[in-house]
Image (cartoon, rainbow, N blue to C red; front, side, top):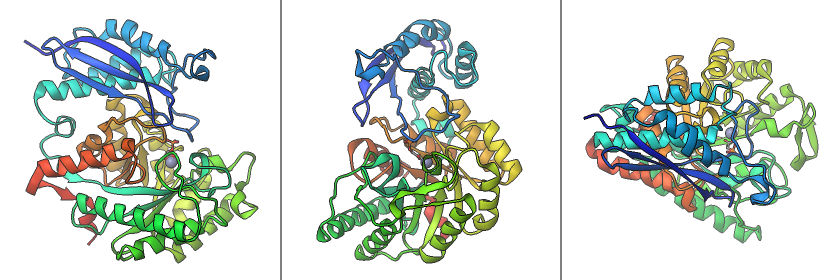
Length: 425
Ligand code: PGA
Ligand code: ZN
């Protein structure tokens, strides 16, 4: 007999910022149970699928998700009960159609994604294969290059932090994923020592990276470079730098405001600023260099830097095929950030990756700044063959859950495991 969805339940749990989110539990007619939980962003793109909240000021300042739970246990459960758990695409299609809006705003992208992920896990349980192989097939054996956000700024950090949101270390020169992770912990410790020696606070931001006050937006790059060298690693050869400018957050009016430097730049001046940075530092990847609506600016950015840098679009593409298609047509970038909750179902996320790869673009699977200990994205990255993953610093439970899961996958694959970083050597 076919394994089908018997029941769907949801609960309110807390994310890493202490905000409520949902955990969904899917049960099959054979008694498999699988749970999944949904993350939340802070610097969200304007076109992301809509996350639903109760807006009841008496609970969690309006951010409760009881209405989301009601949708899962009511309308969604009724529509999906009895469907074969292996039919992920049919289930995701039904969820999209049931919602009926363009941005999943009726049932909530958080309700829909929690169900979609829990169903995928239940399907893997029923098939008795690990999630990465269930989603990606027997050929899924490549571990992504991790990018560690060790210095946090922008919307994820304190007052007077760096304007750019994420300064990341990317240990692509390691032989294995687990070595890359170990190197990252060395860099993180050296960085902490350096900041302490200079009398600088080592409190952390939302993604586990240090979040000090800075004199300029270059200062975190200098610290990061120093920490890599102090760890006995070679900048550029072993470990490159990556950063997420999250530029949509820098533009309340028109020009890009760099408060740490007391000046504003036009899009073209900001592109020049990046060009200088790329000349002075071993930077490999730049995410969200410009505002999500500035498609013409992104074209110029890609023309000027696309041959030297991996230019990743996050808020501009929001993991949605229609925007990625437009970006490919306009030659706006050469890589896409992949976040499940920007689009809202597992199938649409897999499609977004497939579209990017078919154009020869790279992908980077990503956590959100508000996370849970769910490690789904680790399996997803291996399943879709993503070259990159980012899940914050190599510290804090909700961040390392993903990295630890990737180490477990690497160990399970044994000699079959490959590391995407090895391809650069
Ligand atoms: P967010 O940040 O989860 O707050 O959107 C992550 C990112 O911008 O990449
Ligand atoms: Zn981003």
